[in-house]
Length: 289
Ligand SMILES: NC(=O)c1ccc[n+]([C@@H]2O[C@H](COP(=O)([O-])OP(=O)(O)OC[C@H]3O[C@@H](n4cnc5c(N)ncnc54)[C@H](O)[C@@H]3O)[C@@H](O)[C@H]2O)c1
Image (cartoon, rainbow, N blue to C red; front, side):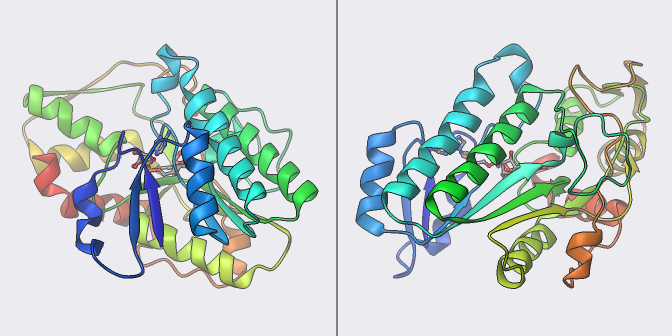
């Protein structure tokens, strides 16, 4: 396995234990450097390409409107073009629930449309999906597009739990929560997410395979805030900023249908969003406190 990452948000310590293993190689490089990417594809000839790199924090695209275009859309184009030139066969891609925008059908199934993302991040994910299906159609890749709910678990790099912990570190008496706290979303443990991706890859044999990866429930932001407070600063009071969405472009009510993935045998360890969030708080205590 070859891991290709510029470490802009990833941490090398987390994969250090694989160093020296014959079947593992780490390359520190940027996907926006096409020449280096293409040279590495030529050298190693990967058949299966699992493309996970992106700006992963939706809020970042608000200030910097080019960020998702570059780190999402162009980076994905580079991966596809290098894969095409070097005859890769399978493309696996981490898309997101945000491609559905403010969906009017809930739980939202994979064939919901029209897809109208509400953030630069969502627009980029949808553009990437479009490029992947076009490249697949024209050059014969098999594609696996995973629309993730909110993924939590060991070694958090971003997201609501980490944001709350950082705020509580600055002020142990008060937690500012963006929005009115009623925003509701689904959360899935990262190991369950990986199991789901592999399940689809091994069991779904279409040329194009689009799957939501989610649990069949939701949890509110205020519940998460209370859980984090209980663990890190039990006397802190919550102060809501009061808007319906946490920030412009945030989808306040996101609920994906998991019927399709369940139909091929998806059996997550953490069966509710609450359990997944609780586990994430417990296993990240060192990072959070
Ligand atoms: N975590 C979630 O809740 C969630 C939800 C939906 C979709 N996703 C998607 O899943 C994928 C993984 O998310 P994550 O939460 O692990 O995020 P992450 O930020 O931890 O991982 C992304 C990795 O990509 C690397 N990277 C970014 N830009 C790069 C570039 N130009 N060249 C090379 N490497 C680059 C970063 O260093 C990082 O290691 C992302 O595509 C994200 O958009 C995540």
